[in-house]
Image (cartoon, rainbow, N blue to C red; front, top):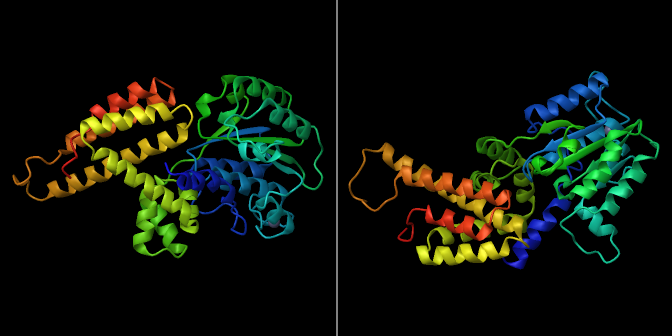
Length: 359
Ligand SMILES: [Zn+2]
């Protein structure tokens, strides 16, 4: 991936803020929002939540809305789960400067490190800082909320350190863990949290939301296709041309890989396998994009076959071939998530692809 594309991807998270937008965006569906709002209404809040979902699906927006609902001084009279979204407290939460809402993630860790060095793991030092923060009493809000972003990046020792806070939760503190991979957390950590899942959203829903935000029809469809059901990502890509461009480039690369000869495909698989250890997210993003391109092809083929089947293209791929390739690629993705031997996984995956070099 070119450096610009990589930069767009890594800086994207910082701009997901939800600032100035109303809390609990209507598109945040699923039971996660419903359950959190119900707990806010009854006051029956858990001391720890584990919110999981794909990166860009809207976990930050959900956490922000929850924190605003805790801190807002101008809540809806009839529905205490509804913050106003515009008071000083709500704005401070959205801008991440509220004294009772603290974020602990890789970005914050990097900002606080002496040399500003990035790490792909949350350090024990960061968790110690969290534990110190958990011991403090709220300054303005009725409770303090500590958000642990990128929770999957905690190695077991860091998770063990966090466990102490989860086992003996300080009063008036709520922990909110956000993760793209709940399964990579220790069972002891998971079992001490109330678990919520933020689902992906159908593309049509994303298209209509983007259009409501002012995107024209073609752009909305393009972004929705690239979003893979991740609404927060789609909204951000609409506002951030560099992010959108990086994603389009990823798609081009995926298309190019699929259209290579088998020999070239295997060479690309080899190189991606070599890159996997250090650039795991990028390689996985490329393969997710391959799945998307294959799904697009499948839709086209199925669409074509709605017409009376023609004999004119004996070389064209069949829906079955494509479905098989999609299944094998998804299996490859799952193996990579488990850190199975990446080069071998990628090579096996490529061997399942239909010949698309003539397309
Ligand atoms: Zn408010």
